[in-house]
Image 1: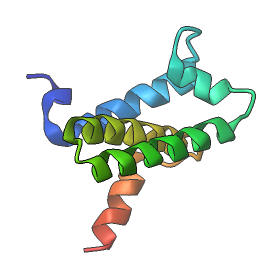
Image 2 (image 1 turned 30 degrees about the horizontal axis):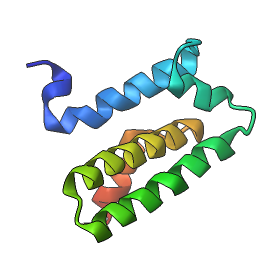
Image 3 (image 1 turned 45 degrees about the vertical axis):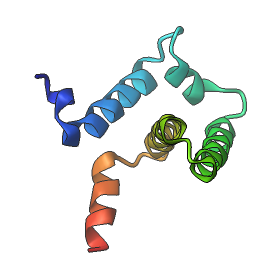
Image 4 (image 1 turned 30 degrees about the vertical axis):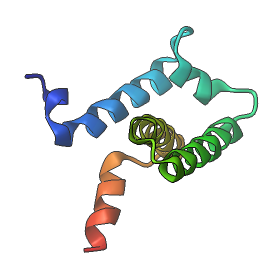
Amino acid sequence: MTEADEPEAVLDALFATIEDRRDRLPEDSYTASLFTHEKGENATLEKIGEETTEVVLAAKDGDDPELLAESADLVYHLLVLLAMKGLTVDDLRDELEDRF
């Protein structure tokens, strides 16, 4: 089992990949394209809005597989936004812990 296979490490591994793509900007990377998009941050914000709507509709329709897929898309784009803002998964984790 790799580190990313641990449930608590999945978000950390995904975020590390997002940061790597932000830093290296490989040409064939969708993630890198979000950091260099001509719309700038708005491209990611639009994706967050789109994915949020799709999450709501999947939940309303009782489509659990679609709800999970769209939720994963939403979380991914939210992590991209955090990276754009210079924030981290640890910052998010701290915020959530402060709410308990």
